[in-house]
Amino acid sequence: MSQFQDKYDVIILGAGAAGLMCAITAGQCGLRVLVLEKANRIGKKILMSGGGRCNFTNLNTTPDNFISANPHFCKSALARYTPWDFVEMVNRHAIAWHEKGPGQLFCDHSSKDIVAMLAQECSQAGVEIRTRCDIAQVEKQGDFQLQTSLGNPSATNLVIATGGLSIPKMGASDFGHKLARQFGLDVLPLRAGLVPFTLSGTELEHWSSLSGVSIAVEAQCTAARFMENMLFTHRGLSGPALLQLSSYWQPGEPIYTDLMPGTDAAVWLEEKRTSHPKQSLRNALAQVLSKRVAELFCNRVLGTSVDATTALTDLNREAMQNIAKHLNQLRWKPSGTEGYRTAEVTLGGVNTDEISSKTLRAHKVPGLYLIGEVLDVTGQLGGYNFQWAWASGWCAGEALAGNAQAA
Ligand code: FDA
Image (cartoon, rainbow, N blue to C red; front, side):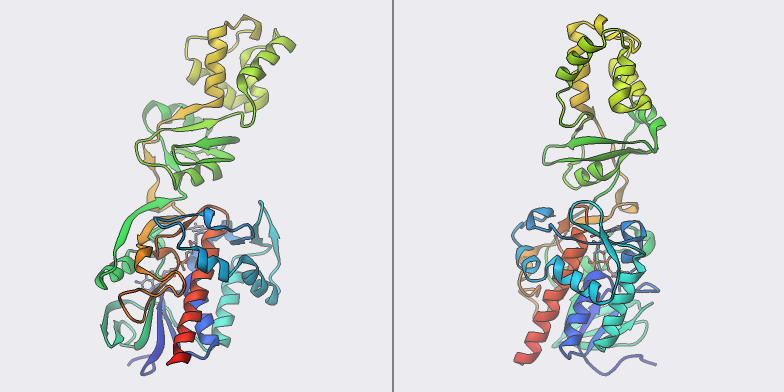
């Protein structure tokens, strides 16, 4: 037996961050809203985000924090629904939060608080939510008509909010991208972002013993640079600096890390040699890199050319230059990334040329809206992806309500 009413104003596919925000906004304006979710519960990615504390926004959000083939697309939504608008909702629900990095807001207790808040807002707005719902078919014959495992609902409007491909074991899939293509929309190539790098061969053999060690670096590839921490893993390199870089990195290109960010290593070495001539190279480096990293750096970079126990005063000019160069610009050749298995986001997605930046409606399909990560808008690390989900969801909800009033 069907669990649905005869007809809805809007059906939203996906009860994630963007879908729930859109549902709340449209529901509060009196629209009959149905949210269909494939998983057994709503907001699963919110629950696992921010190490369980959900980095729910970033107060310093600007369009520059986003990657998209059209960098202007996100501007309208971000300007109309700001981080403070979301903070207002969080405060209204008395959810305690704190600022961790610059502008990065996290829950004091748990991501569950954010999901509970969204669920309560949905309930107050009269939104119907169905979980464990498999959608077999979506057709547009005037209205949108769906065939699902729970019945066959229809609606005037359809919102695709099915997110990206990251963490497939949680149910992420390309359903939304396929559906967009079914309606004739262009989808730009998809790629894992905010994802650890993998190393291979001798490079991995050499550095993987540092697995778990974190150091401050400036990491760089052709298109971007980030000053943050780098974490050695048993597969390669991770940590905020490298996760950020992964969204800009092109397969095959090398990356460089400055192990002494903000310091000219040549000048530092020269000064060390003057002040502590008898100190060994290894001990000098241990003061800035830690003992373990210094040890491996010496073995890897200097090889047999210079003994790490050599006193600074005995290093010749060529060796000094070589060491300094590698300290400020250590080259890595990633074999790839860990892919969607551990990625936080999906780069690429539905081409924003197909969508109105103000209403999030598809230009060529009346009543079809796309929001959140399924679109080709990807935020940097630090709460920006949720802010895009809230903002795009809110704008679509407003547009749906505006349309209904006008009709
Ligand atoms: P989201 O993925 O949230 O929701 C999509 C929903 O659609 C899911 O519930 C999914 O099950 C459902 N769905 C998929 N296919 C379906 C189908 N066929 N039928 C019905 N439903 C379907 N961002 C940030 O700003 N701060 C942070 O702290 C973090 N932390 C973080 C940690 C980890 C481990 C990950 C993987 C990601 C993050 N992110 C993040 C990124 C953030 O989670 C992500 O960008 C947003 O959740 C995107 O919101 P959406 O609503 O677009 O997709």
